[in-house]
Length: 527
Image (cartoon, rainbow, N blue to C red):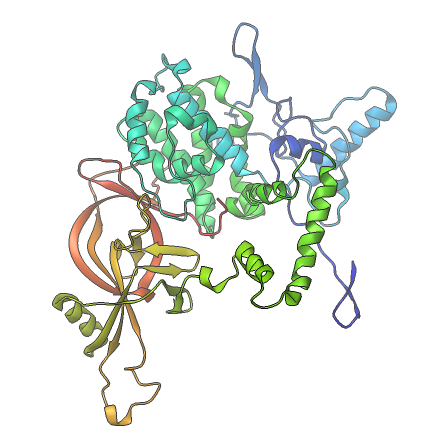
């Protein structure tokens, strides 16, 4: 592609298509395969599937776990080369007048001829639709729907207790959606809500309610997906997920029945290889694209000529930056523009840099520190404190962390953090202090008395409850380390803000002697 730079000189740009992501129906159309609910509909392997009777007149296509290949659960994999051959044979049969798809391939796709692109390995499995809106929604429907009340896995009689636990959770502000009722709103849950239940709320809310065999089975699923959704994934994590998911899929028939060995369940077997070929689940999910649907919806306001409305809106948005310098300073038009775009300085939060990755947020207030806290800070700094100020929030990379003194938000808990060399704590307040000058006669701008020091103060730490084992599966050695059973311990702790590592999710469901703290898989995923 040829473009011109600022000087008018032409520059040649070359790109390569690395991967694509979409839901299952769109994937079938793009790859020119049969529908995912048809025989040989898997886009990753050559399993044909089996028709299972669901009622007197109803049938559904399932993909039973292939017990002849226990390590994988499926037969031969599709490759770019054999897919091209299948497309050739299907196209040839069309020309000969006896058309039939070959191993699920209906014919050629334009993507097969994009240079350097692999039509099989280059198409990701979207975990938003497959895992969250697929498997997670299916499991919760089986557990809580009264239509399955006679089944051993169904806990619809205890759904009010699960609801009570779920609605008592106060998530941090990085989780945009607060928990909603299972009884009233499960059919309206978004994918991000199923993700929160999978990673954070599931184990605490189902603890001692879901039958143990089914809970342990669910925990296999939780750990496998959390391993594949991390910020970075080690080879060991890939191997572990590759052993957990086949074990999870293998047991579905015995626990729930053949009817539920669905296409989405079968796709779980291919997830580790997909992550190995492309990237972690969060980086190739449809969350990123679904997030832009709202922006796209704002670009048209009627039902006629929608494509022209969108094109016009895009042109307006591209032209606005060129018109900004022509707005008179102090004019009503300038004020209106700043109000609409949020660019007015009055709308910006006061922010003070602490380190490369951390900032103090909000106004500072004079603070009167107690003697134990003063002694603790002076012991760390090795100097006497002359001034102290308090503030209520900090920002660590993309996360905003609140202290317990921040009362503007009542239904959120963003004060549970992990601190290096300290552990899990609940922050009470943040302070900024200055120390006494060691040599007033030779004091300079770079003197230590001019440099601020920032600390967090906590009156509560969390210690792990060692006698509670979340997973008891000895076959796979499942151990979801991102979920920890803990209990509070009253203990005053002072630590540098630079030692704050990350925000954690505190899930206190009212269990008598313990609660759970969960680690966020990554900080980049769209919500």
